[in-house]
Length: 529
Image (cartoon, rainbow, N blue to C red; front, side, top):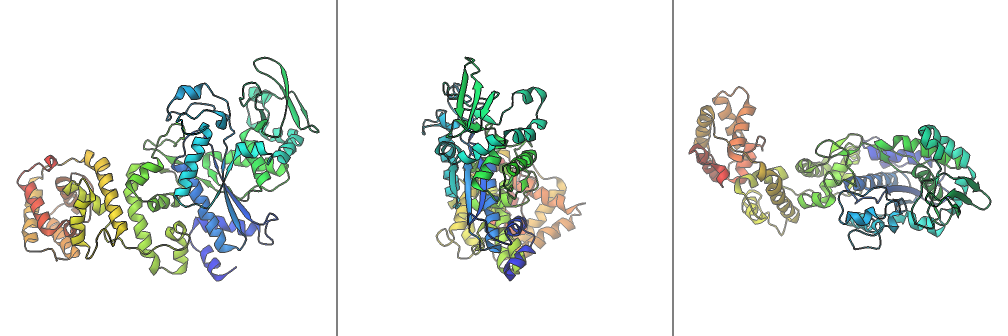
């Protein structure tokens, strides 16, 4: 192992800790297939959401970390379980009656309610592929329907049939008594209706590779091959079958699937192969603390996040603390944006160990760009709170004065950030602004601050301006200086939290800030505009 790899392993990066599992797995020799296979799964019964993106992104970061530790080639497969039967109608799609008429059919046999593709499964697959491509993931897309129907899974399906009793003996203890009586790992696709049936298997023929069941509507005895897409496996067995057939080396899953991972691992061992290495991440929650669901469409979508912030900020939110349940809603965006630039700014000055532990190393595959962000997203939002911009050009009138030489042309990242700030401010900050008038104590303090600002000018350093604000709070004997700053936020910005006031005054302008405070002292209602 190279010295760089040893340094990387000593970092606090969870991605390198995961990659080491694979490095140890193949420490003696590379896999016979010639590469290490990473897999991420998607159930296209609903539209892709940010949790889907998070799993692919996190798997990619582990793969990149492994590439730092080993010379063995790698491959990432994004697998869509699109042969699964549609069990319920999602809440967030049009033409629900169309889906209701096709329940239990494979997702690739259910008509597309959006009318853009041949099936609901294909529509959702295309959405998945589009956002994976948008983020530049290097992957191979694989469809369950195509793999079953092409015969790619045939050998392993025959093996499942051969090991039938051992397989169901793993599953049955986890089921209720009634379900035990009818359970089969094989789900025949009904030749008459096209539905994926959950029916008891009455006989099975290992040599012919067939199973027999009674049609639940006609009572007729039907025999079908387990190969060629005539049967679909129950998903826990399906997962193990896929690991075996594709020789998957690594796959992570949500914390809610820990028991399923355990069962599938037992089954793949029965089939004769080693289960993949893995990682169980915590789930994302919506604004009410509930699990995000593809079918419900709660939480925030990929498109919505990218309306208000950069792809890098989204990636950072996914990278951090994967073992911690986190709310995935609009209010987490500003912090994620500013933390990204903080990490980016620190990177060049860090030693190698710290760089390998810095999220931006992983976000940018070891080559993060130079940081050039003179103003934080939070500060732009606070600027927007006093200028009420309709577009980013209004902000640029202040930015260009604050950040010497900055223009939209030579700082496109800052220009983009300004656009995000305007969109976020108008949709999430402005509707909730609530101004109040200052108390007598606060008025006296603000009058002193006005006097001090009038003796300053636009060239006064932000640190000196901060000292002025701090000194005024001390002079007027606020019991807690945080109450003084909170008073400025609530009277000037209409919000209970806000910026470092010295930096804000420098950005907005000493003259402009003075005038803003004087408007409040005059009793003007800033909420009126």
